[in-house]
Image (cartoon, rainbow, N blue to C red; front, side, top):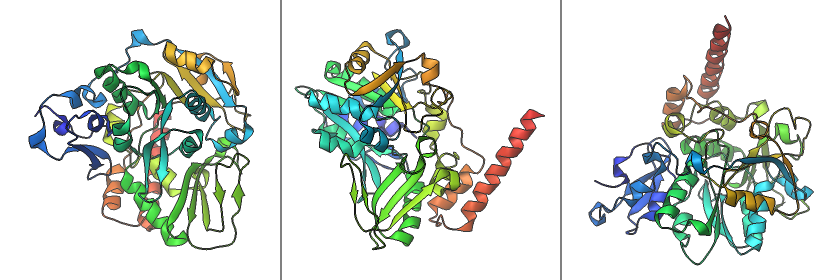
Length: 398
């Protein structure tokens, strides 16, 4: 059939569902815990092929061709100290969205839904609503409902997403000839972990702190930007007061149990995710968006590397790939922009795809079977992976 039912292990970007005129494509988790399109009413399919046309996974090349790129890059950060402190890096993504909303745009960002235990895209029409998108979410985002609600005419949008989501989205707005109404922004992306790994992590924590009422993946408040890989989880079990209020009123937390777990101290989610033992095949085998490859107008991320190694407040990597993106960035207010060569801004970013490690199939088998992450088997498997990796490094040096 001439539709996405023929595609296996795709990016799960959800753009096919948004582009389908018959609204018969739905996005659900597959057996490995990654979002996948399903045709619920195949008899209603008209074989128009639009879902395949907009699918980035279905094309070897990116929607934005190299000849269209006009690269310019900066180190960047918000001049609002509260915003900079709360955001994962320098707060430039929030400042871009804030200014565009004030100019009449609507912003499609990503927030965490504690009830559904998932990251999901949503449409923010005010700055206050856009605040929910602050902070990194290192899990795959459910986009289908928000993308379906985006109007193709009569409204301008900022769309933020992973590079694959943005590549498909550009294909869609070109397909429907409404590209002028959109600013597309992606970010440097490692890969996405299985949602089953995330749900197992949540289940483990809920046994300690109750139902999760808040989740964050990065936190600079205590240890600074360079050691900000810290899971922050708030549960509904009453405990001693945990008062938290920042000066921008982004979050107010009351008397609830709160857990902080750092990657540098062995947090299990980060060990699974950044240890590449629960990533998707689509990321490993089919990602075509690393380093300087993008279909976005603007790309953001952390500016790691030597240039800002002594800055612990957070610095954003900011790259424009189009003239439209450059005009947006150079018109920003209340931000600091320091122009650098692309190689400086992208220092520390991945140039090649993440590769699944040797323990990947075993770890995923235990996760899918429902084993608790608190089980000693996972610590043993992760230790075994560290030993294997270390041996490979030593052998390579010989």
